[in-house]
Image (cartoon, rainbow, N blue to C red; front, side):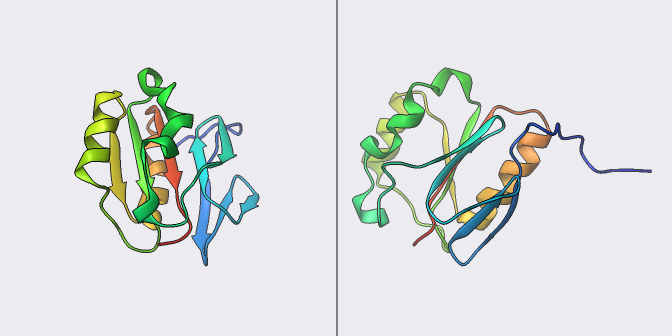
Length: 127
């Protein structure tokens, strides 16, 4: 019995994350990325560190808030919390963000995407 989830060939799957690089559907990325089932793009305005994080860094996702069930935010090798002010601002924009380390975000994205959930992963490569 095959228990592997059915994933369409055109869906983006995160194959690996290590040493600040992602391999997503056969392509390697060495910078922050935004991954959804239909595409992977560079996180253009990704901050260099968590202390610089603001609502502006999430602009690329704000227009998709009604089309996404959950946004997984991978914060690097360790989980780092965002400020309460930023969390409130994201919530006010109807953007449900779950914060976790990047490895956990990669694994969780794959599971939710395979379940057919409307998921986006936004991931930093540094701490």
